[in-house]
Amino acid sequence: MASLFDKVQENENQEEMVSKDRKAVNKIAKTAIKDKTVSAKYNSEVYNRFTEINKAQGLTNNSALNMILTKYVKENSDWIDEE
Image 1 (spheres, one colour):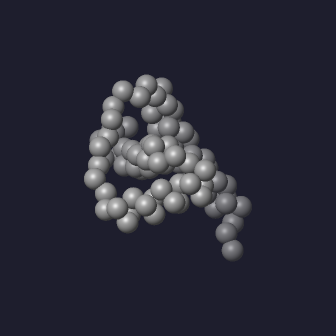
Image 2: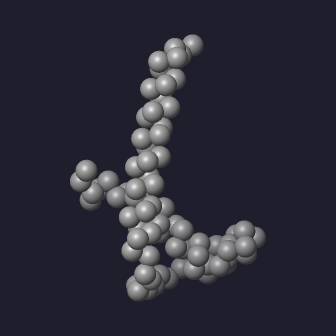
Image 3: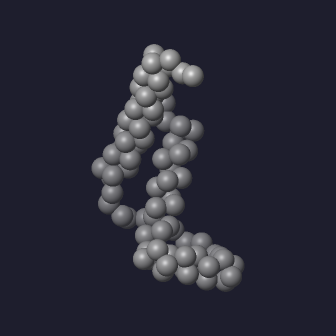
């Protein structure tokens, strides 16, 4: 069983990770002007399933792709960011 100190330390570590994630999201949000276009070719079966899933969730394909790209950038920024 974890000691109180271990629980506090774990909580602080989680808060630090959340803070780092918020900084990355805020950095992206500050530059939210949409001035780029992405083009991709998809297999029609994959595209149709993607569209069905998005409709079921009440999303447009564009908003789903924006979420996917934002998540990808957030999760992989450590490849280029130096802190």
